[in-house]
Amino acid sequence: VRGINREVSMLQQQSAIYTARSFALSNGSVDLHNYMVANYKRMVKSASSAKEVDEYLARMSMVTPMDALHEAQRLYPAFIGTQRVASVMQAQSQHQGPFAARSHFAAPGESGKDKNEKSNTLRSSLSVSLLAVAGAYLH
Image (cartoon, rainbow, N blue to C red; front, side, top):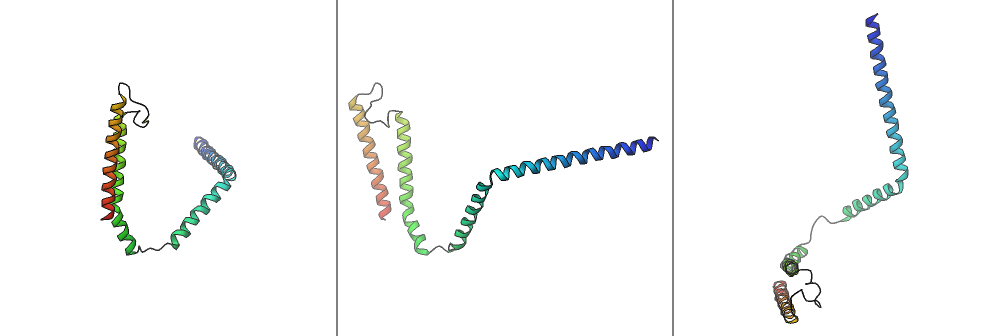
């Protein structure tokens, strides 16, 4: 009798596990279905844009013309120069504080003369940097 009770108990446990898994699966499927219905247009748009990208890439040439590579190589110093100018300008504006962006305001304790001197220094450094970039671009 004890053996039969043990087997019946095991069958009931397996049945309960099966029922729980079936319910979780069907509940998850319903949630997935509801999500897909709610977001159908967005999923179609995403799939179509992915298809467009694939088609565009398929039409692209896999070989880069040498003249384009030479042009990129020739323009690279100008790119580096503009990056340097931008980083120097950013560093100077951060160093001067929140009033650096507003040239018509002087920082606290700063006279108009000091402000003009800083502005002239900034302009001259920008001019020198731009001339360096232009020189690199022309060579």
